[in-house]
Amino acid sequence: MSSSRIENITTLTFDIFGTVLDLAGSLIPPLDDLLNQCPNTEQLNGKDVWAQWRHRQRIEQYQDNLLMLGHSGYLNVKKRALLYTLRSMKVDFKTTQIDEFMHSYNDLIPFSDAITSLEKLKTKFKIVMLSNGEHSYLEKLAAENIGIEFDSIYSAETAGQFKPHPSVYRLAANSLNLEPNQIMMVAAHSFDILGARHSGYRGAYVDRYDLPYDESKFIPDITVSNFDELCQELKV
Image (tube, rainbow, N blue to C red; front, side, top):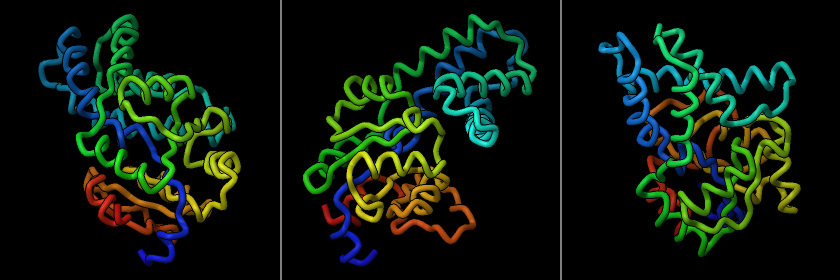
């Protein structure tokens, strides 16, 4: 990325779930506990369920956007996706077990590289949450799970759509009173970078999961494997 483009960036907006917070590492152990409580699940483990569940989550969010249902709630979508996944895998569960499992979302842990790197990035840029989570939930995660003071927190709930709907990125740019090209979206999901780049943002794809980027002309300006490399690219 050219130095002139970096100099124009004043603000980094961060996806939180899967980029800063380690969803797989946080949720697979309680998924194992859930399966152990269900009959005839000896051939399944939490990693198997997670692999299918994470894909279904995206479908649920896209369906809400396509059907113009608005933002039906981050945790509500995750629960719907989990119910669908378990049923598709023929797991015999009780709804009370799922309700109990969903409390695991209060205990999400950050990636080891995220905290120190966010502190470094704060010395040069404003750092902002831009997430599909509800605003109150994001505030809780920032204070209790991540422990970093973000300059601002914006929720897709306020825009009434899930990312990558353009209204989410416009919400942040307008609220920050910035031109989109002064903002860089940082995310470990290519759909988020695609949506941000389509909306005029710069984009940093943190390829934590060794996945290909979407076939699109809206490509990231930076592709790195973790936040340590992101700091190097942004000269922090």
